[in-house]
Length: 342
Ligand SMILES: NC(=O)c1ccc[n+]([C@@H]2O[C@H](COP(=O)([O-])OP(=O)(O)OC[C@H]3O[C@@H](n4cnc5c(N)ncnc54)[C@H](OP(=O)(O)O)[C@@H]3O)[C@@H](O)[C@H]2O)c1
Image 1 (cartoon, rainbow, N blue to C red):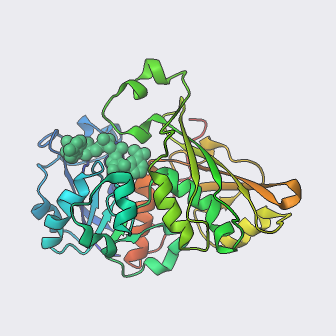
Image 2: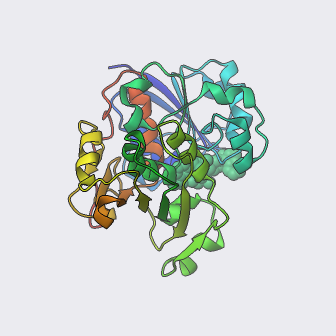
């Protein structure tokens, strides 16, 4: 087992905290450094409650040079920060870089600009692999620059990749997606503040959620239509994403559950379940539950997916991708079975 030196930038945030929680218990991680400007010098347990029950370290002042002196660097920074930091980080030539932000997820600079504006380092976009770990599997071995997919994008792609690869998506599917409040990060806002969120439910980003573009690029690369209608909603949950996708199919598939079962056979974290998934069954885990229902005699399909946004949708998938990139067992450090009811 290797004794990996790992750095986490943005370690005081929600995704950063989840990375620390999982990496601290990962059998291949020998040392772990956490960088945070707002909490430099303070113990991890001041911010991340799990470290009140387990040994942790202290946050360090962010320094890409120091962070680069590692075998693996995870970036859990807000969108826009990674593209500022990564060029400096790469000067130190760290072994593996895994970015959890959107900064390197879209290979085409023109598509990137549609969602996020001009990229600061467009020359680096092509260096990153979109690390949809359950789809790429062993193809990630040896990759050194990974862009972890977005949380909505992960759920939607787990629903649609099997149909895209089979040439079944005749037109852009519609995805109705619901997220918990941790999806919006640790900084409090009105829309994440308990009195407004605890019993609320609202749609947002009606002009088009940014994740639709990474989903479109990935679907296009797998025989799909290159476009998805993504309708997102904020729900009174802390963790979790539930997505319901509706698609018209190019030819009838009377038993879509069989198609899903065949595509995900042998993949350790994607479970094709016999009924629409229950979110509490995946919360706190790196597992995804997927179910499909035929409509209109199989000419249409509804696919339901449930994941934990902070684990499968962020830190867990990033660690799964690290395992695969480094040739470690794919499930190493990610074998949690969940905590339900939660
Ligand atoms: N939350 C999710 O469910 C989720 C899922 C998938 C992907 N992601 C992605 O993961 C990244 C981190 O998300 P998060 O939810 O963990 O965000 P967060 O809770 O807001 O944490 C981001 C951290 O980045 C640091 N930071 C550095 N420069 C900053 C700046 N200019 N403005 C604000 N913060 C800055 C902050 O810590 P210091 O200021 O102390 O350094 C902060 O703790 C994002 O790119 C997000 O899109 C999140």
